[in-house]
Image (cartoon, rainbow, N blue to C red; front, side, top):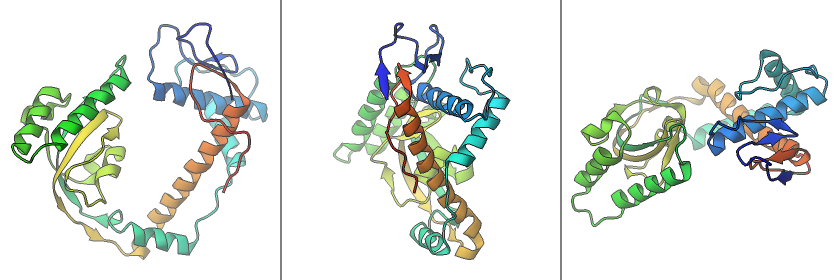
Length: 263
């Protein structure tokens, strides 16, 4: 990948196509998402799947024509093998908690919300400092310490109640939040921040109620989909890495590779 300095520090681009307006402030993740979408749009055009007159997105949202072309491109470029029965069975056996129903957790949290224009690096540092404070103590006043942190620092209305979210099931939560909390065994303040679409969470699991494990036959479809998704994400990352390695990238950090190896 040829990474160059932008003539205007606030403008990022892929092969000369701007990803943002000069007066627009994006997080690093939002900028990467736009860059990846533009890499795929240009690749679809290069493969003849998209008309050369297609107009680049100015807001990070691809046009219907671009989206359809990118979908065709990925179908051609990514060879996703069907997971074997043995692989599915191994995955199920190793993730029994994930394939259970009725699991509940009693949770409280401190939310450091990511909002437009916020300094994400500084926000993460504040969240890490809070996590360290509520975890590293001699055991005295641990309950009030967490409640005080939630009351003074949290951007969630639950802060007024010490961060309490009550008893939750997976469907109560954003998927990325649920993925970090359910199907686990940790009780107490989690040793790492939990990231969600809302921001950074310092989370304490107060109690867990185990669910009922579902037989492999009952969740075979879900297991197969999970393995397909894992393989797809790996293949897509490798393909994007290859595209980035061949592109002129300005103002955004992307992984780049010179060869593509799809497993």
